[in-house]
Structure formats: C-alpha cells, structure tokens
Image (cartoon, rainbow, N blue to C red):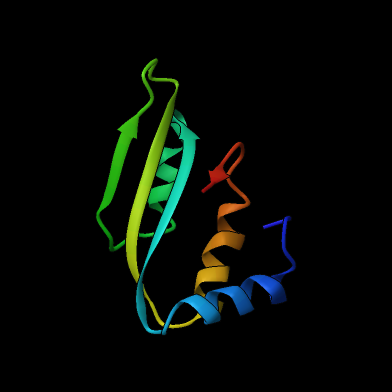
Amino acid sequence: MSQFTTEEFKKKLDDVHDFPTLYMFKFIVTEDKKGEVKSLFPSSELEYKPSSKGKYTSVTAKVMMQSSNHVIEVYKKAQNIEGIIAL
C-alpha cells in the first residue's frame, strides 16, 4: 500500500466497489508463510497455487467485505507478514 496513501486507496476502493461486496485478495508468499495468510481469513476457503519451482505460493481469498475500511484493515495486517507481496 505504499504506492498510495490510505485515503487515496480508500477512495479508489469506494469508486470501484459497492460495499458490501465479495472482494478478492491475492498474495504471493513463501511456502512457510501460507499459515500466516490463512490467519487473515480464518473462516474463508483459500486457493493455493505453487510456483513452478515450489518456492512461492499464490494465495487467493474471496471474502465478503462490508466496507473499504475493512479491506484496508486486512492489507495492514498482511504487511506484518515478512516477504508478502500483495497483487
């Protein structure tokens, strides 16, 4: 989220989505960090796709979000996971 300020990101989310909405989060992490990403979405099913060499895993979560603020909260928590890349 360093590319945008939180306010700019919130405005973009509100411009594109009508909340509540099903929001798709996509992250890339090393294999050993999958559990930390899962902890961001405890009651959701996640899709995992390993990279061709198996070093990284793409993690996709489709979650009903009530507002842009809730989306931003998830991204802020994700920043605490070492090496995570948000797409």
